[in-house]
Length: 351
Image (cartoon, rainbow, N blue to C red; front, top):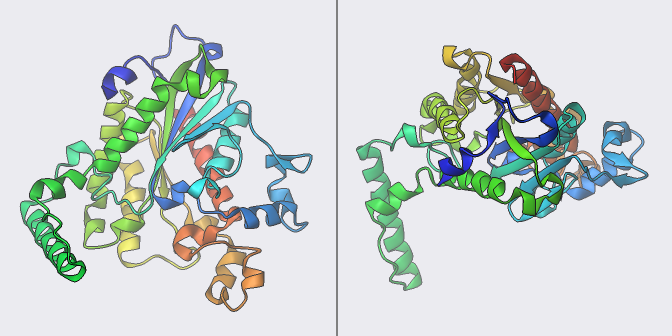
């Protein structure tokens, strides 16, 4: 069903009969909690109106209010409409999509649609695992099943319940579940875009780019050692299912380390992400963007003392370190960098 829907969609590659005036560009934003977006509204409002930082957000506002774009649209979970703030966590926070979509909207003549498909805490090793990666080893799965049975028995005993014990089928079903949900979300949105976005009625979608921002949950249990392999499978499978063999693919390199060099599992994942653009088959159509170099140093400096200096903290940050401090400045810088990378890839690939 997924491929039958995508077969009817005009892709960025091989455009011929459909003019740009009759099309709109589609960009898919996928990953985990940092793609969801974690900037709390109080911080965003403060920095957008404070004399010291207002210039950083002035292009997103007009007459003292946040702009709602009439040429850039977004779908995230049940929320959809013109791009503006608050398309992040709980439908209240904001993520990189605001700056990303704004930059794309300013660049392209056609309308732009962002489809966000992201869920907090989902790893590439397990839930985002794509079809060609297959399942982990039988030994690994048996160990996982054994641990799951043990936990269920303990919970049953503790809570006086009689929940059924998990089976191997239950364990296996989790693998790739987010990948399948991601593809279904794209499919469903493109199947009913004229209803969701009446402004796009009569226009043909071009799937023009994919952005991946994820990594945190692959730091555990050795998953980082498979990251490069799983990432390669993921890119190839996304392109296969979207019927776009050279689809521009931007990888946001995890960068919660900020100004401090990454080490351990985080460094392994960073290196795996950076390696993708160097693979011969991905040269010129995949790029990796470092996010640690974009760190908001004011938030980084204050974070260790955020509890003791909360009144100061809430003017620069709004979340924990693994969420890039919930820094509006850092998320906006990331969105801008991803947009610039997307545009550059499109030019390189000739779309």
